[in-house]
Each structure stands twice: as C-alpha cells, then as structure tokens.
Image (cartoon, rainbow, N blue to C red; front, side):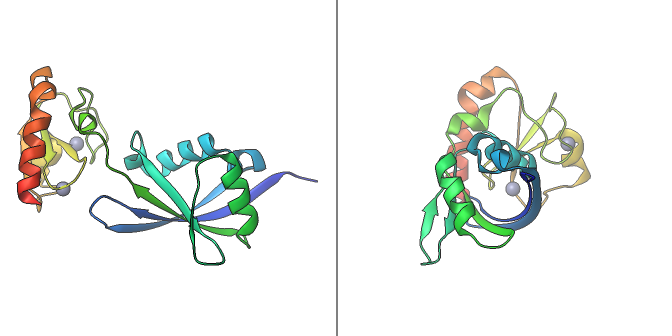
Length: 171
Ligand SMILES: [Zn+2]
Ligand SMILES: [Zn+2]
C-alpha cells in the first residue's frame, strides 16, 4: 500500500489589516510530511513568502463549527483525519510581529525579491512591506505612503520607533 498522498489545501490567509486572501495548493508527499507541523510550516512559508519569520495562528473548523488550533503534529493528524475528502481548508492568521522584525539589516524587496542594497522604501501602511529603489521608481505600491529609509545600522537602531509612530498616525 502506498503512503503517498495528494491533497488540496485551501488556505484562508488573514493579515494584520483583516484582509483575507485565499490560495489553493496541492501538497504532494507522504503522510509524514503532511502531518508534520514543522515541515508544514516550511511549505506554508514557501507558498506565502510573507509568512516567513512571523508568528502565525493556524486553525481549522470542525464539524461543530468550532475553530480548532493547529499547534503540533497531533493536531494535524486529527484535523486531516476528521476533514473528509481530499480538500482541506485551513485558516492562517498573522499575529503581531515584533517591531524588531521591521528593522532588519538584510531586507528583501517585496516586488523583485532582491536584497535591498541602497535606498529602502518602507510602506507605512503595511505591516512589513519594503521596496528597492528601482521598484519604487517604477511606481509599484504607489497608492500607499512610503518612507525612504536606509538599510544602515542607524535606521535599525532608531528608525523602527519612528516608523511605528508614523504608522500609528496613518492608521
Ligand atoms: Zn525591487
Ligand atoms: Zn503598503
């Protein structure tokens, strides 16, 4: 008997602003991969780059309509056993990330996915959105207020406090 599974996951991703994004993807793997929490978390970060290094809450709705938290392998095994059919629906909620996360020295442009080396344009309306000089100039994300900062240590030290304060005013 083959242990290989092919299940379709429907993920409801809720970010900090309450926006819900739905994505569907197929997981190919053995039962272990699917029910292993760590490996699932890795797959999730690949499917949604935003979820890398942030705290998230994963839940699923059982037959009674209750939201059950998925926190370990056992939770996953139970959830996938109880959810009938090959389509599994999970909800992922991004929890408050620590402000320190906003101020990393190594920043990747959310548009071109390249490491930002010169000017860093930080969105003051999104929780964690940065653009490089080229992508900002092209006009991406132009409907949001951006702050030109740097990737230098001085910004990392003080800039996150400033960004946090301005973000609060805009909210
Ligand atoms: Zn870019
Ligand atoms: Zn934005």
